[in-house]
Structure formats: structure tokens, C-alpha cells
Image (cartoon, rainbow, N blue to C red; front, side):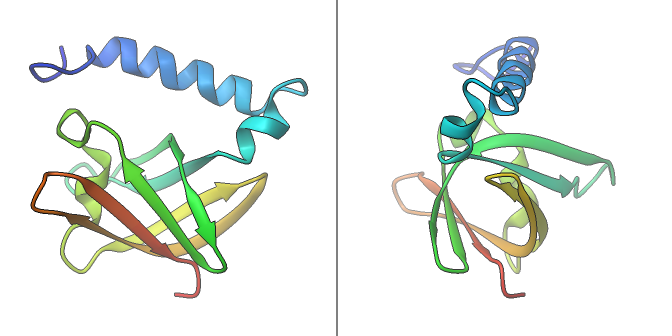
Length: 117
């Protein structure tokens, strides 16, 4: 079960699986890929590799991800402090980068990815 006030983890997994399938579909994929990237990272404690779809904004070699409902999610915590390596699939192309997560005084979380590192 998820955290209080969040989606149950099984529901979130099901939602993400469907979004990933739609993102790679011929009919919807082109539209969704313009707004959704797939981030792939290694878990800070488990050492396992995970992938999840996220909404993003890109300006040049900088990608900004505003984490919706950050208290219900764990993935962004891998990038606190000095950050760490991340891979993004942006519109069908895999790009490596360095991600840093920051939480502001209102609790909002932003992950900034530098694709030049």
C-alpha cells in the first residue's frame, strides 16, 4: 500500500505501465513523447535499475522535471544533495545526464538534469 494520501503502489504501477505502452504506440506515442520522458536510474539503496515516465520541460541541454505529489514518490530522492547519474528517453532518443533534486520551502520538488555532464 502507498503512503497516506497517495495512490496505492499497485495502482501507480498499473498507471505507469499503461502510460509507457501509450507512449510507444503508433497512434499516441508521438504526442506523448513530446511531453513525457522516461527516466531510468539506479536505486540508491537497492542498486536495482528502475524506469518511470515523467512530464518534463527542456531548454537546450537542461531538462526540468516538476515532481507531482513528491511525498507519494520515492524516485527523486536518489538525486538529493550532489545528485547522480540518470538516463532519459526524450522523444525516442536515450540521453545520459546528471540529475539534482531540490525541495523548496513550500514542499515542491524540482529535478534538474544537465545533459552535458
